[in-house]
Image 1: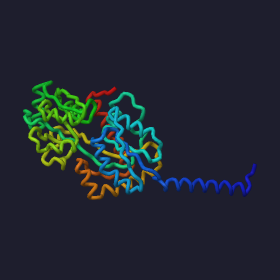
Image 2: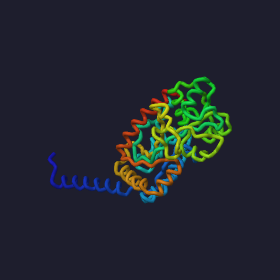
Image 3: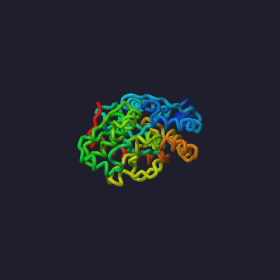
Image 4: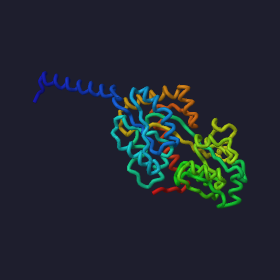
Length: 324
């Protein structure tokens, strides 16, 4: 059947209406509050990072950005919620290094850490700091390595649990240098710090924001930082890499959306974050959490995530950590 001029006109009008509706839907976003999930309970590094930006991000987008803590499963429960949420830009996650650690740590997950998420915007980077008990028989990384090798099985380190960043960063280090050290798992980073403060643990590796309040506490000493370069948050503390070439352990903090979230939505959030991360007040706010703001396009952030995924897989493998 040959279409008539009238039928062709109707098709063109319908197509134009659909296109207009699509554009209207994109430009109308956001039409309701946005959920920014944190896959851990309140008070952690991801939670404080999210609360440092959510109000200003909401103002920039014209809708409230509500921080919602959904802890459980070492961060996998909240992550799963976002992975299976509608790809409409109203459910996001502020993820960190644990996002990729869990991908290798857990044998079975109902989501893919890369394929089920769309990179939106990097918020910043944070290294970790190694702290030792005040009366430890060593004060430098080389001395710690020598002491550990001379006393196999006698060195211990506190962690916030099997597979946590503190556990993996330390296990990775001791694996590289050939020191037989014993992990002391606790229920959280606060308990892990208490073990060192009380002298029951020799060492722990914690995020900048956890270590900062104890820099002048005589019960602990700052040993070194885990970044490849010196850390501005701990002036004078050498990088572990200065004594152990190739060692590096840092965490990223970034916003991810479910896969297939419209590009217009991704670009709008990324542009808003670009502007926020240049503001002195936002920079200062994140610095207080031990985070160095970092700006990346979605493409560059995505490339970084792929590299970090492979790096964390290697760290988990070398540490021999497994979570059920």
